[in-house]
Image (cartoon, rainbow, N blue to C red; front, side):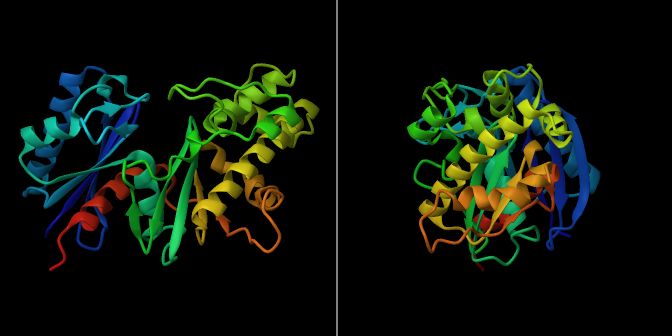
Length: 307
C-alpha cells in the first residue's frame, strides 16, 4: 500500500497524517512544535522516519503546510506563528536532510485544498477558503487544484487594505500590521480585530468568543462591535468576489464557528456589490482544524506527474 504524508505546522502543535491512495487516513500523530530551529528540523525528520518505521515503508511523498510565506527568490521563510522559521531556508534544509520528494504550501492554502476535495466545496468549479482566526488569510482552488500564484501568496486577502471610507464611517483608526503595511483587513476582521473594534467602541478588553456570547445575550456594546466587524468583513469578501468570483466560499478558523455568520454575512457582502452580482454560498468547513494536514497530503497528488 502506497502512502502519502501530510504535515501541518502550527504555532504549538505539529500534526502528521498518512493517507492511502483514496486519501483515507491510516495513521495520525501530533507533537509539540519546537521553538529552536535546529530542533525543529531534527523533529520533522525524526517524525517522518519514525512513521516510515511504524508503517513498514517510506512515504511516496510528503506534503508540508508551513505557516507564513516564503520568498521564492531566496527561499527564506517568514512566519509569525513559528518565529524560529523566519529567515531560514526551511524547504531546502528539509529536502537535503530527508532526500525524498517534499511539497510545500502554507497552512491556509492547505485548508482550502482539503475543503475542495471531499469537503464543503467538493466538486465545485472554483472555491475560496477564507480563514478567520488569529489572522485572516486563505487559499484559492480551481477545478480542485490549488492556485498559488507568481509569489506563492494567492489567497492572502488579509493583507488587502480596508477601505478608507469604512474606517471613517465607523470611526476606526488605521492600524499597523506585522507584515509592514498599514490598515490590513486582517487587523480588523480576525478574532483579535473583533476584540480591537470592541475596545475602540468603548467595550471591555475581552476576546472574540466572549464578545459573540455577550451579543447573543443582548449586550449593546458587543452587538455594535459585531455589526461593525460584519460590515468590514462583508466589504472584504465582496472585494474577493469581484477579484476571483469563486463558486463557493468556505470559512475556517475560530470565528467560522459562529452560526450567525452564515445567516447574516450574505447580506453584508451584497451591500458592497453592484446590482446583478450574486453572493456565492458561504459554507462552514467539513474538516475544520483537521484540514491542514489533509490538505498538505493532497499537495503531493497535485504535484505528482501524470502517468
